[in-house]
Length: 165
Image: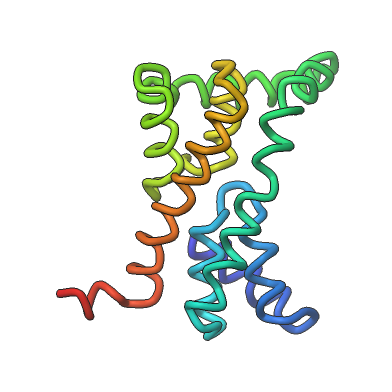
């Protein structure tokens, strides 16, 4: 993930503001808020400026994913090339859905909030949609998860761990 963050940071920062780079990275799947806070740290964006930018970028796609991902996937499955990729994404998400299935709200919140590879709001939204989790419950769980991820990534990205210990 660090190499992706570095690539986006290096290639976008000459053309747009540091804050916009952080916002764009936070919007992207895989990178999300985690990558946005790493980029903010690399670009020396103050933590208190970076936090709302990263949260906004990370939560912006959530309602659209929850509402439209199944329809988009159904459309893409009609084509040979994209159908295989969509099936792969669905299977991958469902393999990671065990904790979410058993403890719906808390499971989804922790899935989004714990910064591990393959977790986050994008995958959490896909899982919530595939499991048909109630829209309001999914939104709230993911917002709480993004907040947890924000705290954990601030500790990592801005070296707050050293201040705490």
